[in-house]
Length: 184
Image (cartoon, rainbow, N blue to C red; front, side, top):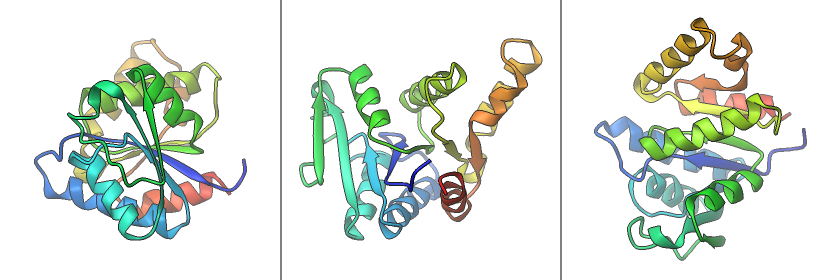
C-alpha cells in the first residue's frame, strides 16, 4: 500500500455525553494535520464532526468534506474546507468519502456511524477493498460493538477472520501509530 494521503473519519454529528469524545476528536484532527494527511469527513460543523475538522483546520490541515444536500443546514456544512463535495444522498456521500481515503477511522457516534462502519466492514469482508479500518474506542465506547462482533462469530454468522478486518485503539496516540504501521 502507498504512503497515507487521506484518512476518512466517520463520527457523530453530536458530541455525546463524555468530554473525552470531543477531546479525542480534536486530538485526532490535530494528529491528522500534523502527519500531513488529509481529513476526509462528513463536512459538518456540529458534534464530533465539527471538533475533528476545526482541530485539523487550526493546524493547517488539508480537508475534504462530503455532505448530502438534505443535511447542509442540519449539520451546518462548513464552507471553509479545502474541498467540499455536495452529494444527492447518503449512499453517494459514503462512496465519495470511501473512495477518497486510504484508511477509515470510526469515532464514537450513533446509527449513522454504525451504518458507515458496517458498510466499509462488509465491503472488506467480501473482498472489495483492503483499506485498514480503525475504531477509536474512547473510554471503551465500542466495547459493546466488539462484543456483538464476537457474538456474531460465535453463532456462525461470520468467520473468525472478521476480527482481522478492523482494529480498535483505546487512544489517539495508539491509533495514529497503528495507522502509520498499517500503511507503511
